[in-house]
Image 1 (cartoon, one colour):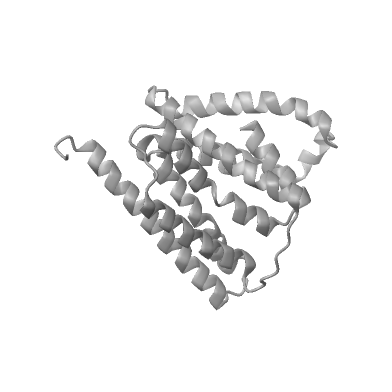
Image 2 (cartoon, rainbow, N blue to C red):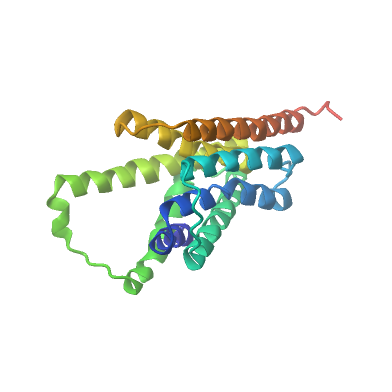
Length: 229
């Protein structure tokens, strides 16, 4: 948990947000590779790889939105590649923890507790200032509450529960939907203009996730049916 948040946020300091957004979207592939070797009943299949390729091409279109300008930032891009690898390890470990019948909320609470403990030494490596007076601002306070309760607590509890129910591979496929949801939200809330490139990217992303998820569903049916040979 500590490594994932540190690496991804540091990457944003050295490369563009679009680069990080696209690179982090390969997390399902890393998850599938690790699950193939370390989890029973979750195998990397050709259909998953095809779906991954289609979804990633859609994510690229959404991120670039017609501006096909390649901007390489070695340090930031490398860190962005490491972040989804760390996330894949996290997903596989949470699947293992779920198989031990630990309560989802309790397990998530412990993960965040140790994540915060190991995050504390990192404060001395960056320009961090306590300045608790900033929380008197309703904007700052509401942002922190949203990040803590919504983007962290609720999201990670539901993610960990989904991993326990669906498996690491099938759950990771839904990461493909993040840029699509972002596009829809930006249109509805920020009134941003939608282009044919974004529409095509959204379609490819949804189609690719459908292909990958459909195979995972079949695998789960096969694994839960003892009469299938």
